[in-house]
Length: 606
Image 1 (cartoon, rainbow, N blue to C red):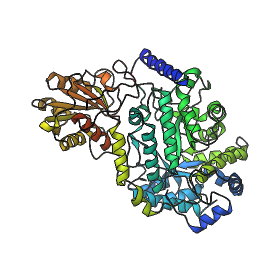
Image 2: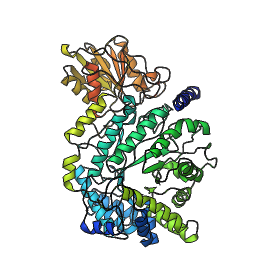
Image 3: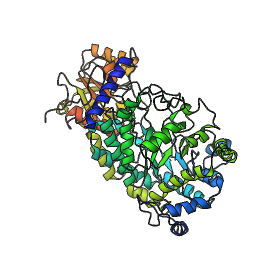
Image 4: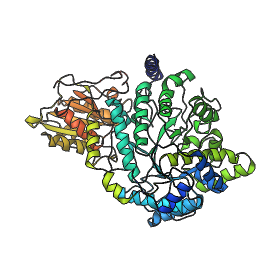
């Protein structure tokens, strides 16, 4: 981890920069369409249309208390099918929820939404996802208050994507930050949103609005657009407009800002040490930009922020932060969704029975993925019975949730037709857009001996080695293998080898390319590998696959690149830069302490 002095230097630089900057497809049944029209619930289903609040209020008034409480919850459910899950998934649902299928879960608890996860076996293929969405919507529209679900997932792109090939996968936030193009960010979100909508997913937990000013941040990092609040704000607003232009509710996260923490809120409770002035300069601008762009939802962070609330409560449970700052200071009137309630950051101070109630008292609307849904549901009902929560407070949240469902056309377009998947998901136009956008993200950090571009016409022998992290959804294989394949396709003779064999195999190669992944401070196997390869005398090219901070933790190499992720599009873009088939266009969206400033990036002569 960087020492406090270097972190504070970054913080001061980012604050100074901020101060300077300041001077769809679907169709629904006739029954659902008629019911929606009768209540004035967005009968044309036009994405982005202003909801009919009077009609929505009538819908809320007709709901039972249990149905209203159910609308607040967005739960996981296990299985690839709403009604016919695999036996193991049915058993998991039975153990956790007392039902065997996702459809039964929706009906029993009158849920407002389901969140899709790969590990819950929800996201196998686009056609399967669309069928799952249809089955879940059928369960919602034929039971209880007959309100459509807001189906959601984390499809940030880059290192966090729940749905992989054949869906189109774009570079992640920091890669888009390296390109600096708001148009590309909006285009990526628009295309991604259209594919989500074709599969029935109408809320995406993206974009990330955190400003990453801490290189030691273990949970945000490349999920952030960068360290410059103004640049992050511009790209956040662009993605909000892109997703929502495609009929998908965007969700800016993680309020009030998770970019300067050294603890992962999945496993602990981070503390943000920014002063109020630092928060206003660094963390607030992207969220304000999201609000001004009309974002449908904002997700809270499970972090303690003493300068904003000295109580020690995580932001998710903090009324001064959720209501006092997000609602009153920023004027946000949309849906506030908690980060997942099964994360450690929100469970350390209070029990699982109290967390949902406290989140609602703080001003949250959607309660995402509680670890024990039956307990959480009972707890909210008990708080209503005791008077701790009032029905009018619940009505406020339900109305906001229904407004988003109406604005995104769900009262008229709940079911995604199967034809939409083939017409939209992973089509050539979208794949080409991903390649074009990725081409502008590769950042050439160092090239002191003009090793790059490699002379592909001479068919040089290249060795590719290094860390092979688990392939992201956008990858067809380990990054060393993909990179070697792409270099060979461009005319080189590239071979991927394991790190244990790399030093012995280095001789006779024109260069050795070393892929690194989140290199830690101090000694490490990655540092040893790079040091030993440099000692062979063969030129070493460093390819930082994820965090661009890696070069500062390694000996200087003959050339250094940052790709920000290791999907196929990013690896192809890197190969083209390395061989001169494309000129590097990316610029660092974060400073690399001790090595490169914010905005650094080399170009090559045409």
